[in-house]
Length: 105
Image 1: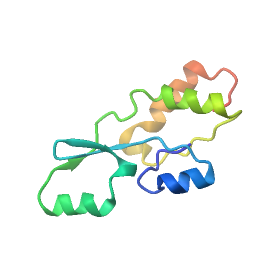
Image 2 (image 1 turned 90 degrees about the horizontal axis):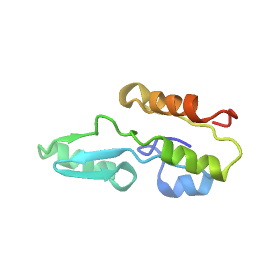
Image 3 (image 1 turned 60 degrees about the horizontal axis):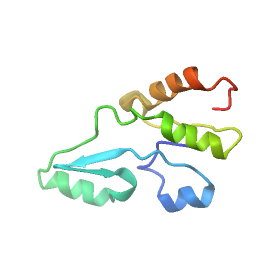
């Protein structure tokens, strides 16, 4: 499982059995999952002067995808990318401390 949606396409994730946590990109007034926003469109919007950002707390519901993945697989490795900037690791680590008594995550 990874939050590297900007680096791994949905197709690649499916081919390699990776679960993607969608990070969202806000372009102007529109919020779109990163996997559905082509990077060239983000850059074009920025060049045109459109504000592009990310939500401040993208993984408030971090437990939902984690619980779902743990129900499907015996053990889950979480590759956290960009966690220093967006707090994904901290959210997931907090979820683990509260919910993962069997140390499967």
